[in-house]
Structure formats: C-alpha cells, structure tokens
Length: 189
Image (cartoon, rainbow, N blue to C red; front, side, top):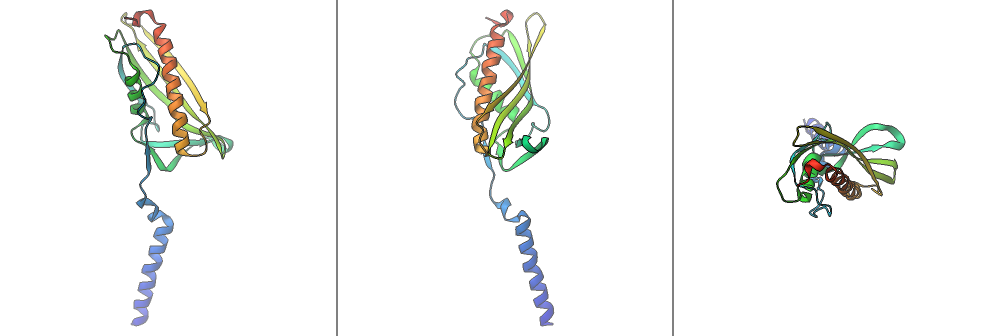
C-alpha cells in the first residue's frame, strides 16, 4: 500500500511540474497594458463630428500584433505579455477627439483601421504600421474618402518600443487628416 501512495504522490508532483512548464506559472504575471499616452496631438483638427473609429478584425481587440516580415509577413503574432488598454479604434478615436477644435461641426468623419501592427524587418528592427480609410461626409451630402498607409521606423525590438513608434505614426496620420479636411472648403466654419 505504501508503494501506491508513493506513486500517487509522485504523479501529483509530476503533474504540477508539467503544468508550470506549460505556462501555468506564467499566467500569474499580469500583461503590460499600453495606450497612446496623455499628450494632445500638436495638430488641431477642424471641428468635425467624429462618428466613429472602428477596426477590422483582428485589430478590433486589445491584442497587440506583430509581423515577422523577414520570415512570413502574412502571419500575425500576438505579444504574449503586452496588450492595448482598449481596442486600437478607441485609442485612435481618443487622440482624434483630443486634437479636434471646438466649434460647430460642418462635416462628419468616420475612420476604419485596416492595419495596426509592429512589423519586424529583422529580429532587432521594426516599424509601426498603420493603414486606415477615412470617410468625410460634407453638408451637401457628398462623401470624400482618403486612404492612408503609414509606417514609422525605429520601433525597436519590444512591444514597449513599438508603442512609442505607434504613437508617432498615429500623430502623423492625424496631421495628414487635418491637412485633408482643411482642404475641403465645405468643412470650414
């Protein structure tokens, strides 16, 4: 009988070791949570009605994605211990709202994020990639559309470094959107 107790105890210890190797111990460490910071973008957007910023799948969650372009640029990979504090669409909406001038909006803006990832060209070098389609509805009922495809080099080799580059690329996107909207006479107050 003592042999079966010993065998049962050994099996229990062995199962604990296997569980910790399978990641059971790693789940006790909370992931790092990032947003785009608290600074207001330096560029002021004309008064627009911001109807929403949505992201296509899989960028509609809090998961932080990267691509290893030097190996397989089509594969999206999750950072295991890093995530966005909110879905990227909400983070970008917040930055746009911070940048929007006060006033009565004449036009309405909608944005669809199509890419929001860190792309590695080598194991120690990456860039932040942002693709979006902006739709501007003007008072006459016409619709203007603008697609932006931007990347910001110097995103480093970690998620935290990638966040800094993503902050810069979102700021660049807002600057380009401001220039575009400022050029639409029907949107000016």
